[in-house]
Image (spheres, rainbow, N blue to C red):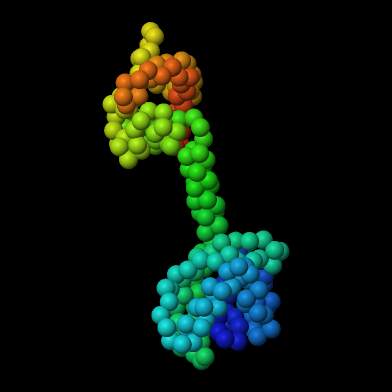
Length: 212
């Protein structure tokens, strides 16, 4: 619970997140803005002003919290206005650092795949396309919006010597990947001789969920 004169109450979970003890935080002597990353302080100040003026603000928001040891954690906060003057709020904090890092990693990987010069194509285990990067658009002549959800055999016909797509999938499932030379056909029927790598994508428990 935070009031205009400082923290009135902090629970053990919040203390673990910020690295301080209750005696250090509670009271007028501690400036709560020390917990806010300098770049995020305008967010908090705007909310304080809005509260004083009686304006409505979204109850849930995020900011970067600066721990006592200098470490940075990203927290999601849900606030409830409490009786008291000039203002008192109860904040429910949730540490979402790992979630934000995972989201940033996914964004980074997506950007990386979009900017590589090799075609990157993924399908689910039934063969339906789930990803088609910019290089694939240029190489095969299909836009991603045109092929997502379609069966890969409709988009990229192939010619293989002495084996089938099913054979490749069986090898990839056993060895983790298959690599070889094949002929692929573009949208306009042009033949492309490609070095083709098929890798199996698995979920956290090791079950195959698609190919890349």
